[in-house]
Amino acid sequence: MNLAKAFKVLNALGNILALIISFAILGIFLYLKIHIGIVLVATSIIMTFISLGPLSVPDIILRTACDGNTIRLVIITSLIMILISIYKETGYIDRLSKSLRKILKKSSLSLMIIPAVLGLLPVAGGALMSAPLVDIEGDRLKLSASEKVFINIWFRHLVFLIYPLSQVLILIATLSGVSIWSIIIRQMPVMIFMLVLGFAISFIRRSELRHDTSHESYLGNKHAYYQLYIELLKTILPIIIPVLISILVELDLSISILVGIIILIILSRPRYIVFKHILKDSKLYLIILAAFGAMLLRNTIIHTGIQNFIASSIIRIHIPFTLLMILLPMILAILTGMTYSSLAISIPILQTISDFTVKEASLAYISAFIGYLGAPTHLCLILSLNYFRSSLFMAYKYLLPANVATLVFAVLLYLVW
Image 1 (cartoon, rainbow, N blue to C red):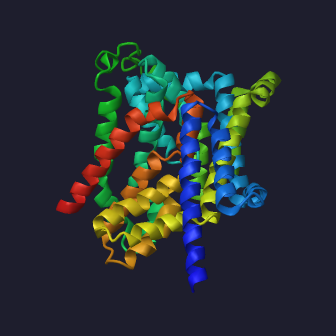
Image 2 (cartoon, one colour):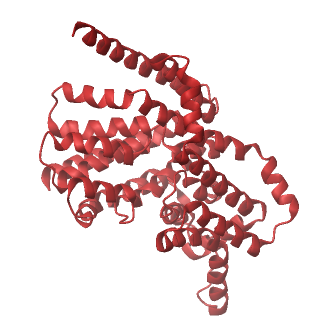
Image 3 (tube, helix red, strand yellow):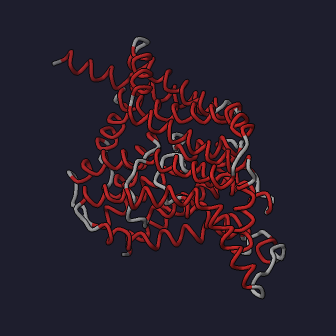
């Protein structure tokens, strides 16, 4: 019995040491602006080395490389990158941006709507699809790289709070035994709050918002207005088709995105040199490394037992249930960069402590959602930081206050409604 207790203590100390050292190194590397893919891989190796020993390092790397989820993620991420690269190389991205600006009239509206619409594509790292458009429209409002990251992340993800086809919403409704629509209704005020807050942070002081006269008026020319919508349809079709296919036909996302690429090639007719440029661009391979690194860190946290160690440690502290309901999903989401896995672990644990109604289900989901948005393991954030060449610390200047404000609003809503 004493040996068993001693082993548990040593194992716990090893997990604590691995967690502290690896995430301290992650923070240092990010501060030094080392590429995020290298940072994630290095952090995973260090965590495995300390927690499980050096012999386990190649094993976890190999497991991750052979994992179907990793392979699928790398393929999907690569295809998305190829899709947006063709958009950029052929000038279709400029045509799409121009038609959206003329219809929406303001760059600020484009920046809010584009990530939200493309957020309907339920794919890890899908923020890459809206990043080029956010980049172009952000330049028009003279936004910094970190502001573009915030906009791309914030407006893309807020739609998931009320999106009935969200796998996370379906999961939490199933686990808690409450209607998904009751959760959506309860989270509608939070989504509206996030929309207003994101607008205030991003655009409220922008003079272009009030005096945007750079776009032509097509109201007096019906034919020109009709042609404008035709142009928008042509340029947005390669993005919308994968969304519709994935929702209506339930085809694998990699195939859906490939269909989008084929449509874009047919419409834009790129020259051979375009594909040569895409394959030579280091950004494609850095994105692949970042995607692999995110999965490696996630698998490392799971296989080392650090995830379960954190969850069980929080419960032993005997903190109030409401606070526990906030902290447990949030911390697990920060560690894994996934709301799905954090809720899959935390909801069953929380249900053993207290009854779970729609109020608890919603607060637990929002807590995980907030942790996920700012997590250094969040793939959309990683890819956005990489694309806009921003540091995590600069992005946190906007993300952290917005996350805290949203969480406070959600908790107040929980207490009064």
